Image 1 (cartoon, rainbow, N blue to C red):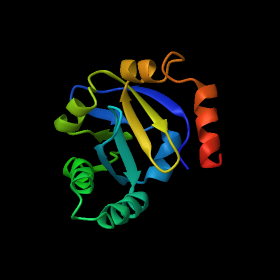
Image 2: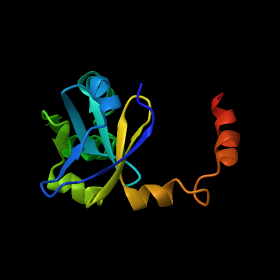
Image 3: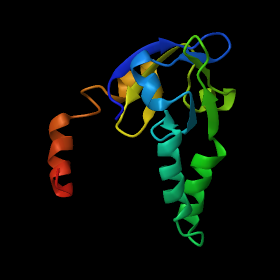
Image 4: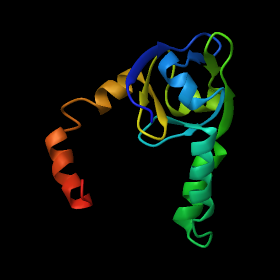
Length: 143
């Protein structure tokens, strides 16, 4: 399970260091795709296969389902960690998440999210996210 928050920089070639604590779980090769809320999602090969099965099960006749599948699969790319622990994020995905210099990689259970540092700070600020409000809403889901 992926947990934690790690700050890193994007180098001139568009590479980021994968935090050492996450390397074993994500594997040498993994999948990155466009994510929700302005970030990128990164999945281990096994978790990507699970996610892909869920996407395949969506009804082709529903436009929202087709759009959802297109969104995730069109941006998906296999990444590989080099000997220095870095991986390359393609330009189109860097543009999607506004990754230019400082990034934050967060663990969210079955996937990693890669955020522009300032976007993450704004998104996760107390003004945007109230833990009390979230907890109140989660009780409806049995959490």
